Amino acid sequence: MESIDQALFNFSPRAGLAVAVMVGFLVFAVALDLTWDQFRRVLKSPRAPGVGLAAQYLVLPAAASGIGMLMAATPSIALGLLLVSCCPAGALSNYLTGVARGSVATSVSMTAISTLFSIVVTPLLFAFWASMNPETRAMIERIEIEPVRVVMVLLIMLIVPVAAGMIIRAKSPATTDNIRHWVRRIAGLVFAVVVAILLLGNMSVLGSFASIALPPVLVTFTVAVLLGWGLARASGLVAADRRAVTLEVAFQNVALAIGLAVAFFPELAGVAITSILWGVVHLTVGFAIAAMWMRMPVADNPQAAE
Image (cartoon, rainbow, N blue to C red; front, side, top):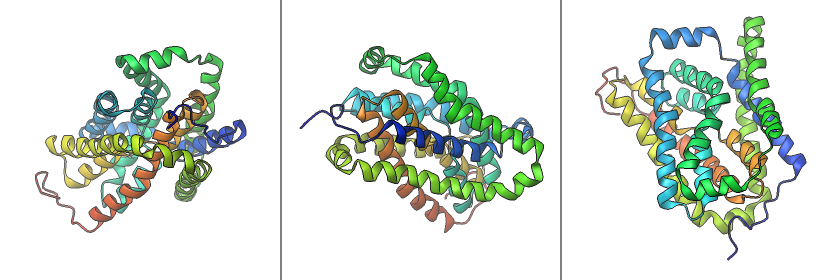
């Protein structure tokens, strides 16, 4: 069987631009909730967001790096695990938190702040942890990434959407409150469309390599869920905050990871395949977790079982 990185990934430059624009819209939907009140709320009650952000940006990438070294059949799969784990949370985590009867305020605060930080943190974290694995470091060193391309991709996917969302929110808060729920719903559909387009166009490739790429994805996702829930419980957070932190840590902006994979690693199909499979896990296991918690009462006692 051919190597995962020798597989022909069905993705044209025009489709890549379309995905980049759709990812930008997803980030814009999150940025509509990004206000100075979010920062004030975190400063006033920092424990829950602080625990979640630390788990998301400090512990999860380290765990993904270790799992990649132990389980990834190729360095590109390890890079895919790292790429997703270094991305901020997405709008899906906010929706699932609401379904799961978690603290939406905590979830939205974490998503907004992690999205803002991701402009700098995501590329730095990815570069750092990729350099920790000799195989991924060697692969990264062989790839020529043009600085101009990096700037353009960050502008389209992160900087412009974040700035636009914050400006619209600041200039027209009433209008933003009226449209943001619809924008988030549309963003959820956009995420599903991104995953569906890539699935339908690459079913044969995904089917051929799912057996080697899916197991490390499932293990990393499971670790993310347990990590978020365990740290939240150890920190004494109430159940609603535990649910929010768990979902924030486990549900990254996979569409952003897919867009970055296509933009920077088009010749490494393993990176994109790993990101797409993570998106499939999000859409299936994520709703199952939210549905389970929806049927369970939310206790105020931090030590209460869920």
